[in-house]
Image (cartoon, rainbow, N blue to C red; front, top):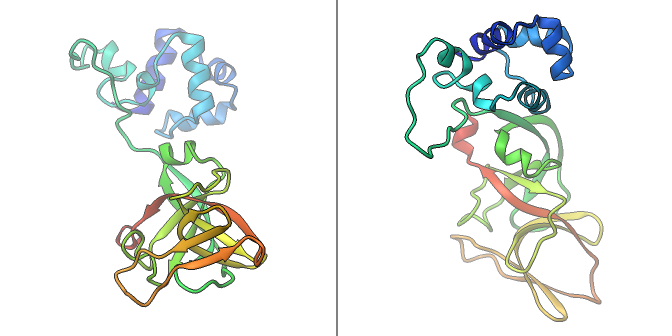
Length: 222
C-alpha cells in the first residue's frame, strides 16, 4: 500500500470527495487525481491536509505505516517513542550553472542542465545550485568531475570551502582562510603542484560567491 491507497483511505475515512480534498490541500482536483495514481504531494499541500484532518505526513507517504495500512489493521506496531522515517527518499532538482576550476582561476562555462539532489538537502539550501569541478587542486575533498552544491546565501567563514570570484570575473574553489589583512585560498590536493593563493585586501576585489554544502560523486551521475 502506498500514496494512492492512502489518499483513497483519507477520502473514505473522512467521507469527502476528491474536490473537497483538493480544496483542503489548496490544489487542483487534477493534483489529487495524480496522488490517487501514486504521485507525491508537495510539502505545502501535504501540510494543509495534515493540519486540517489531524494526520501525520506518514499517514499519506508511508507504505507500511500509512492510513490505508492502519485502516486495514496491517500497520506494524512501533516500539514506544519510535518515530517513522519517510520511507521513499524524495528527490528535488537544482540547476547546474557551470563549471568551477579547482586549480587556476577561470570564468565558469554556463551549462543548461538540472541535477537531482536529495529533497532534504535542498530544503535547507533553497537557492543552491551545482557547479561541476574541473582540475585537481581540491582532489582530497572533491575529485575532478564531481558536482558541488553551492549555497549563495551562506557566507563562507574561515575554514569553509568556498567559491569566490576574483576581480569580478574569475571563479575558483578552495579552502578559505581569513587573516587580518589577507585572504588565503588553500588547495587540498594529492598533487604537490598547487600552492596557496594569498590575496591582500588592497590588491584584488574578491566576491564571496557561496559555500560548498554538499557534493555528488561522479559515479553517482552515471
